[in-house]
Image (tube, rainbow, N blue to C red; front, side, top):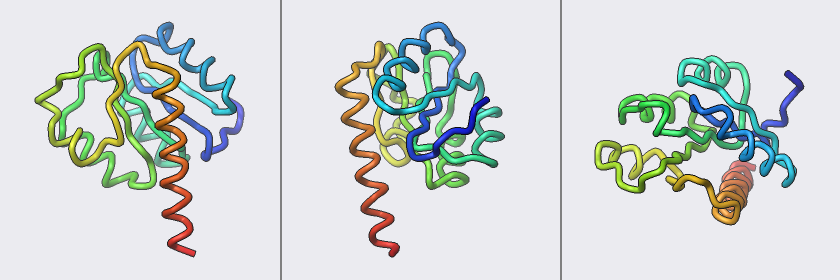
Amino acid sequence: MKKQNSKTLIIIIGQDVDDYLSLITMLEENQYQGIILKTLKTLKEYLSENECMAVIIDIDSVKVQNREIRKLKLTFPQNTFLFMSCTSYHPELKESICYYLYACMKKPVCSDELFYLLRCIKDDKKKKNDLLF
């Protein structure tokens, strides 16, 4: 795997690899990098040694619980987490959506929405860095 730039790297978590290839292409056409990981375990292993701009979790193919998302956010606070799903209603993930996620996108992911969110994430990280220095 080639060296990734953490400022432009988007990690997609899910089982439907073929479905994510168009999303990876869309990211690469807009100067982002994308990689696909299949499980939260591999995400944790990857993030323990690397950084990224954002993580998009396909909650239709990877079952998650609030406690897992809370632990991810506490363990890797520098990373921004997003969900994507075919449905917009997930009452079982209310805590995660309220406190730990940046956004939840509806599938198929709209390029305008995705790149708006990525610009916002980039701006938020820049503001946070500016406050630190």
